[in-house]
Length: 336
Image 1 (cartoon, rainbow, N blue to C red):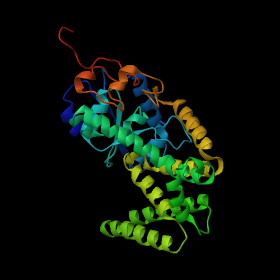
Image 2: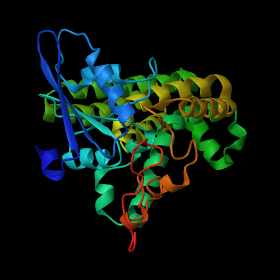
Image 3: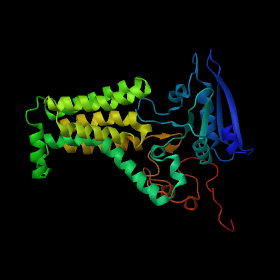
Image 4: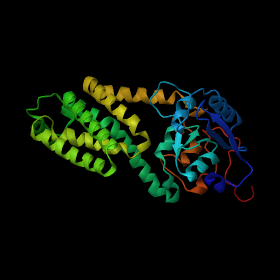
């Protein structure tokens, strides 16, 4: 009803399916008939109709069925809880899947740039939001590679570190029983355990456990000579940076461990090669005809208006060309 309220048009189409042998869950496929690509709509309907399962409890049950590239850690289906986000995505040509009883609405096609965007971005000035998006991108980058770079510099590239900082670093790690590689993995696992424990505790107790546990354990481990203060700081900074884009935190957590392993075995050269291979891999697949790294891989000039650098509404006069749709123009200038 909230979506209908924002789209009072006959172009809004809602097709209802019943999925689940026992639950008979209502699944609604929503799209704008004169905007959404017919082939994509048919493909989504066919995928959902083919689902044979005892029951669908939440929209997450449908995610694996909608993904086109299996056996990958990368997110391929958009998710949102706010009706204004869903409507905005439908106006760009996406299809929404609403599952009865679930607060999350799924949207396809999906591209990685969507998670760099935020609904509040469209209610503020373009210069401010462009700066914030650059901060988010920087946060994602350091969350993945910072621990790996720290280990690589200690083991293989200590000559690039300024002498004063190197002396401080050497003093802080002197007498540690573990090599830098093992120490970093130990700190990462320690913080992951604290995070998982805080999630499963009652709300206010979980917050206290996360803060007190990190302070007490971290401080005790440093004083006991098991880990160094820089390692704790690096992992903490990396963990905080995950949440510049919270929807990608699960994937970033795995990538952080991967880059740490690479940095500890192959140094900065290994990190550079791994990053290049990762980008090539992400650029190799798409979601329902939409390149995963669009508009940067492939380069689509018109879509850059809502990329890392954002333009005002008037500057975004076409729908994203990376998303298949029937209508490309969404703002008519005088005389058109």
